[in-house]
Every structure is written in structure tokens, then in C-alpha cells.
Image 1 (tube, protein in one colour):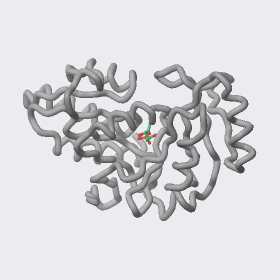
Image 2 (cartoon, helix red, strand yellow):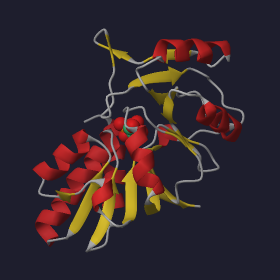
Image 3 (cartoon, protein in one colour):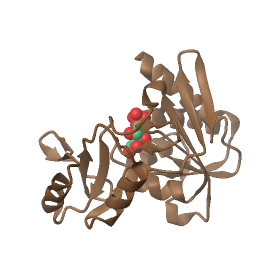
Image 4 (cartoon, protein in one colour):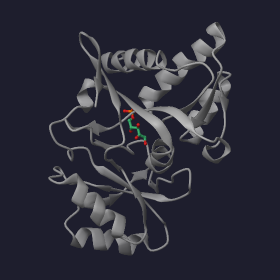
Length: 226
Ligand SMILES: O=C(CO)[C@H](O)[C@H](O)COP(=O)(O)O
């Protein structure tokens, strides 16, 4: 395991201590969350912890079910107590970029329907400002090449996300366009602009969503609260 993976595993194990019995828990997506779901599976198996998970991707649902964690869809629960997710970049104001794993649409839907949101990251994700990590957009395939041109005209440096020569598809069968911005001076106004553009289903700016961030640092996990 790499050192970065060790930090991810540590924050994953720390995060599951916050999960209470008989609660509904949003389960994020990504390599850090994968460690958290492993640790949650251990608590379910060893302590008899009873929770319902609301997964934010098919990947997470399959992993959770394989570990004996019960899951329901977001429309099958009446509330979500706590969602634990990863992030790609977090600034000092608790604003974040998500979607590196292509799941930010479902992640945002689960997050905004959760009483509390916690992000778990290794320290490489913390930044003074957002933007050096490309900002993901989930876009409707119909007209997406025209949309890419409009984004180019705005100077947003868009690129379709391609893997093995094919466009990456989300769990909702949409495409992903990444904006290679390098710097986001004003996340709020960028989010507003992207929200207005037809064809973009959701962008990966998560503003004013998270309450707690657990950062995996060399000297142990650091818990930051808003
Ligand atoms: O937003 C996400 C997926 O859409 C992930 O939370 C984000 O990409 C972080 O992933 P990882 O823990 O693998 O670094």
C-alpha cells in the first residue's frame, strides 16, 4: 500500500467512528471512501451496527452490499443523517471540487439531502484556492460537442474525459467534461455561470455543503469543523 493510501485508510477508519446505530448514512465514492466502506463493513460485522447506506454510485453500492451493508436508493429513505464522502480539492473556506471519480451528480444529490456532510481526504487535497484540480461537469450527451465549444469560447479550457479511447460515462449515462482552469478566483460566480448553461446537468463545485473535514496528516488525522 502506498503512503497516500495509508493516510486514506486512516481517515476512513476515523470517519466510521462518527456513525451511530440505527442511522441512515450517505456513502460517497472514490478510493478514500472505499477504505471507509471497508471499515464500516467491519463495524457491521463485528459490532452488529445497524445502518442503512445510501450509495452515491453503483461501485459503492456493490462494495457495500458485498460487505453485508444494507443499502437503499436516495428516494427510498425519508432522510439521511450523515454523508461521508471524499473530495478532490478543498480550500480554507471549506469549498470543494468533487467528481474526479465521475460521481459528483449523485454525490451532490445525496449531500444536499443529508443533515450533515463529512469529507475525508489525505493532506494533498488541501489547497489555498481551488482550480489546480480540473473541475468536472456532468453533461447530457445530446449537444455536448456544441457545449464544449461554448465552454471554450468562455475560456474555460474544457476537455471530454476519455478512457481507453472512449468518452467516460457516468452512472446516469451522461458524459464528463473537465475544465482545466488552474485557478478559480471566484467559485461562487463560476458556479452561477455553469448553473445557467443548458446541457450541464451538474458541476463539481460543492459550496457550503460540508460541515466536517477529516484530513489525513503525517502526525495523524486532523478533524476540522466549520
Ligand atoms: O468526487 C469524487 C468522485 O466523484 C471523489 O470523492 C473524489 O474524486 C476523491 O476520490 P479519491 O478518494 O479516490 O481521491
